[in-house]
Every structure is written in C-alpha cells, then in structure tokens.
Length: 248
Image (cartoon, rainbow, N blue to C red; front, side):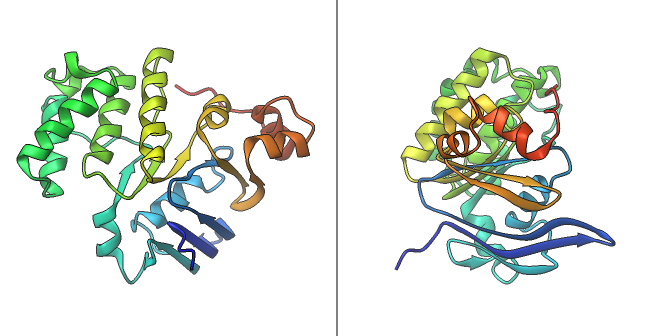
C-alpha cells in the first residue's frame, strides 16, 4: 500500500476569528518536491509550522511518514529538517560553528558531521566564508547557512520556507542544484517561494493557496495549460488576483 511521505487531511487552523488554514487536503510522495505557493498571509507558513510540530491544528489530521503531528511529535522531529522563514542562528558564531551546533543537537556522529559540513558548504558556495562570524554575513549568505543547518541531520522530509530569499542569481542556482540532488535521493520536500521561476524549475507539483484554501493543484505544466498561461506567475496572478511581492 502506498504510504505518502506527507499527508494532510481536512487541515484547519484558526487564530481566534481568523482562519489561517481552511480545510486543506494534500498528499506528497517520497522523492517529490512540492511547491506551496500563495500571496502573503495565505497560510503557507502556518502549514509549515503545523507539519514541523510548532503549532497544533484546530481540526483535521497531518502525518509525516505515518507519524501524527500531534501525537507523534518527537518521532517527527527526528526525521524532518526545517528552514524557517526567519533564520535562527547565533551571530557571534561562525557559519561553520552554527552548523556544527545543529549537527550536535541532532546527535550526528562527529566524523560524519565534519564530512557532511564540508560537502554541503562546497555545494552551496560557502566554503570560503564558513569561518567568518555569521553576524557579518549578507542576507543571502545567512539563508544559505540556514539551509545547511536545516539539512545537516540528513532528514527524510525537508520543509523549506522561502530558502532563497535575498540570494544573488549564482547563489540561488547553487541552492537549486543542491535541492534537486536531495529530491533525487528520495527526500520529500515542501518548498514555499515567491519566485515563480523557482517553482517552475524545481517543483514536480505545486499547490496554490489563498486565504487558507487550496485553489489549484498540479504540475506547473498542467496549471499553465489549464489556465492558458505562458508561465506560472501568470497562473498565480490569474487565480489570486494579487501581485507578487518583491523579495528582499
């Protein structure tokens, strides 16, 4: 029987009178890179926070590798990696030291950790700057360090909330290639992004949410054909009626 990597069924999250996620249902397979798209305030980060066990749903069910986000939170935390929208790091430590700290928290063996850090830093183009204090990093460099921190435990599932914001085109491309490699190795990935070309380049399927509701689901090609659009950004604007914000 097929076991989805991530299953969301009738998921709802309310904050008082505000419904941030409204009866959302999704299944995401192993080795699938799924783009969760939507305007600001659509509920994307709330979904990420529920899946990463930081928030509990008001109604509905969500599971990762058959573990329930409410009842099996500890098991889920051991198999996921989360790159949050707002990076969490220590400015007085170097980039390498921040990554080492997260590896230690995940109890990655030291020899494995050292090898993994070197490999990942090289792949995202940060090896030369790894021993600078993180407080001296640009916004794009911080995002790259955060991405490595979120993946240093070699998780089965990655939840990446706008990982390439503030990156220059060369750095963004390096992170794209890195994410593709993870997907090809069987990792299930949810990616939120405001860069529609990023979603077109990376995602096997995308779901567009607005006001907490799923309003479109399919491959980028399917959605472009269905809505007679030349690209995913045009689909997005047609469906949401809103302009994409400029990433900073």
